[in-house]
Image 1 (tube, rainbow, N blue to C red):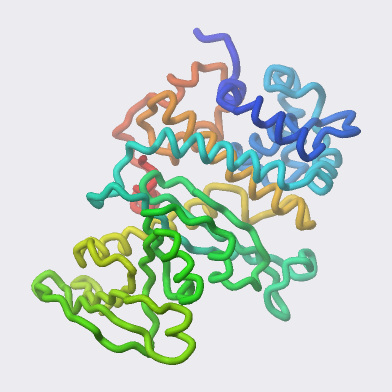
Image 2: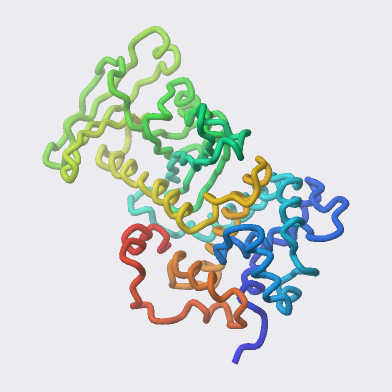
Length: 389
């Protein structure tokens, strides 16, 4: 029988402690701290994410109920809810965003061999946002509407590895298109987005960087046809054209040719219109790239269902951002553990097992073995295929 470390302690062995120490030192996270260091704070927040804790009192009760195992988990003393609340409100949330960035870079390297499903060598990103509703009386800093508050998670998802490349947290009022000003575009990469990001000034900057965009077109766009390519209508393609924008400001904002592709989806019967600055790829490949964008929506749905980012343990902006970034870091850490140990179980199953067995002293690689034929809940099995990476 294995009598070594708990599962939680074994998971934390994959944590980049050296890089984390540099981030903490850069932001002065442990300055004047007498109890609950930044490392212990992340352990507590990670524990709460893995075990689905509902509140700070819940975190305190569960950890104190296993007080004999706290030292082996990395806690020097008992975790008090007031101390954890103060740490979440006072310690710079940039510590946790920096930690998540380190983990994301590591995870992307591990998952580079995974296939997107479209035969191409270029990186493909999907850009989208998701709104988390908040109570205006409690979160008055996150203004959204006159009677409503909200957080908005802007995510650039690497579709090839299903790992976020960039995450930006803002209040609900910021427009989606403004996130394009914050990104550094990779030359040769494809950026797939909906019509909310269709701003020709910003798309021209993306084009000048050597990257390619594939947004959904808006209705009533002023443009004139320059050339039409032949298409096989049996494949669902309706048109493949080169365009020039018309109008004084559109021409100044984007003076280059645009490619417009019209495609009729046989399943829904809808006609979809895409714009791109790539003239080399086949039209059906462009359509397939946009179709793969559904993964970012599934990512948002999955994280809201299985990470604690809808019920917050603090009301200040710093506390909310700390919780969201710790949730992202915990999720990516489990993805790293899964890949490093070559675990066949899905992310959903890994998180479910850890949620009830973090205190068990079982070898980590053996904890996820079992009857692989056991079916998950029908709804989860239907919607979580993305996270079988």
